[in-house]
Image (cartoon, rainbow, N blue to C red; front, side, top):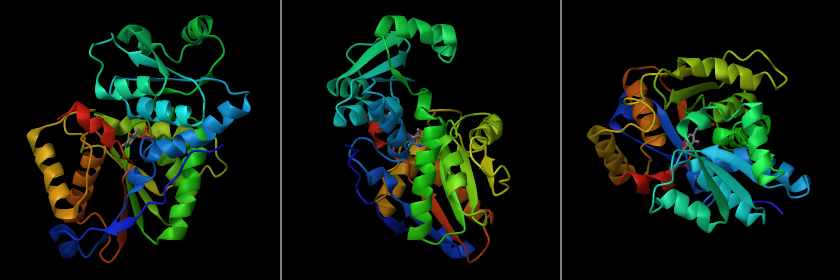
Amino acid sequence: MALQYNKTPITEITAPETRQAGINLLIKREDLNHPFVSGNKWWKLKYNLEAAQRQDHKTPLTFGGAYSNHIYATAAAAHELDLKSIGIIRGEETLPLNATLTFAKSKGMRLHYVSREAYRSKTEPSFIESLQNKFGDFYLIPEGGTNPLAVKGVAEFAQSLKAEASFDYLCLPVGTGGTMAGMIVGLDKQQQVIGISALKDGTFLTDEIKSHLKNFSDPVYGNWHIETSYHHGGYAKTNPQLFAFMDEMNASYNLPLDPVYTAKLMWGVLDMIAKGKFRRGSTVLVLHTGGLQGLQGFR
Ligand SMILES: *Cc1c(COP(=O)(O)O)cnc(C)c1O
């Protein structure tokens, strides 16, 4: 059994900035690929959940904050595949549960809260062992879903994208860097991959991505970089200008964005276009990675 997948469109955005700079701006609406397992999370989960199923239906266990797109997607995907799931949530339980966790619970995810301090040790063997003592055998998926199987899934998506449209630049938002690593693996070396960091001080992400790439054959990838100045104050930090920008994108281009990743992405791309960072006459493809479920927590 495999996850449901809906084909997604590529649409063109003609903005004053694109006309002036002579740029063909396209957006791949991968947020529309599944009603709940949306965007990049679908591709990151694909081979992980296949592996969990193959290992005699082991229960996926993963980590996230109370508004996590990854927790939301994992709960929905596991439910669709008749797997149980466990979510280790950072911080104390707050009642009533927010929309993200209410949804995860409704999909049968068992929620377990750990202190922020304990959460920080989530990759340490002793912490994993304590989880095994508590929950028994599980299939571990790291925070954000990033591991070699996630990169493999995104690389497969990148290959299909390459066949679907021709473009010179691919722009996407970056959290852990797993999705960006997969795009770098799957695209051609003549295509530039530009990541917009959703985190403050995103320079460390370059090394993170290099380490995700190490697991894949070709070690020489010089066709990518991370833009670190579009985080708007840090991860999940917002301001009225960002919300006004989201409203404008929605009204002008029928383009819904989320404040954590995709609004900062679009903001950054339009700013880079205005600043002449892309070659005149080239095609820039923006990847809408989803995340719209999180909007409920902001408005
Ligand atoms: C999780 C997420 C990202 C970040 O993906 P990484 O692979 O962790 O870099 C980007 N956009 C959206 C909408 C997400 O939910």
